[in-house]
Length: 335
Ligand SMILES: [Cu+2]
Image 1 (cartoon, rainbow, N blue to C red):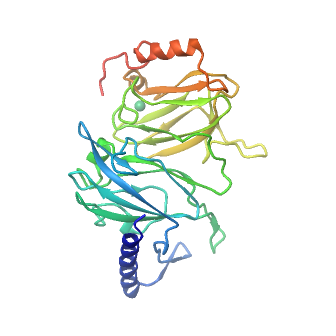
Image 2: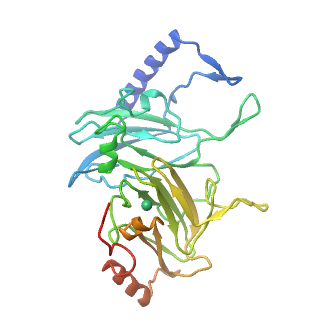
Image 3: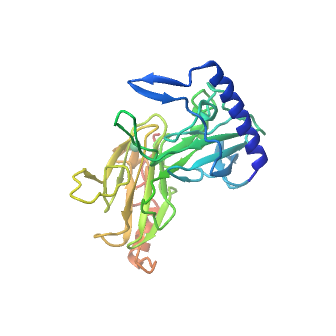
């Protein structure tokens, strides 16, 4: 997108790395495994821009193009082995950054004040996020690879931990897929639980209604932020408590769940088949900590029939829900 700019920052990165390598041993022994000095990938397989912008009412979001910032920010996807260059352009009035979970990066792409990774208002910075497939280490143990339902967020605004940035909406999902993983039929549904007893910084009935048709494969990504503990519960659907939510062949006995604890910084995801075995309708998703759900920490997974039609009865249910009479948001908000 801006190849010259990305090449320049990569060059600076490699010069810095070379300087470091001159003064440090290139490998170290840790637990009996020889570790090579980590390096950013030399040629990103993909480059994108990310715009941090003000959204009004003190909110700030990330977007892929100017004027498209949202809360949560855009869902970024990689496949193991890909290396993603993200140029963050700060259109806000405070320093911000992008810090990612789960992927491979050097301290230069840590996105923290600690490592001078913040971006001043009006400035930009390119972060490099690499990923890798599972491998077997020299000692026979397994490096499990990068695949997972991860997330990214600000780590600069308001404190060295980006607390004000996260509270204002600077967060999003980062999905790293493994070759061969089944893909969802729709854009992933991103549920950010917290800060506060909110979902995507909203309370029911203004929280997202995620819509799918009977039989479609859908994907939820759940991320925790803030100071409260939450749980994610989905009605009518359940998943395997593993990396993908899908059972593997051959009698996989991993626990099947429909509720999972999510603390700050946690993330997980799973796929389900919409309405499988239970039919269409308005299915709730919500935090199961009762005073959180009573305060509006929930939303609707709307499953239409296979042709995409929503029954008259379900439409009535949705109207009632949006008026606040069906189990969400009817209590005084205490968070
Ligand atoms: Cu909660």
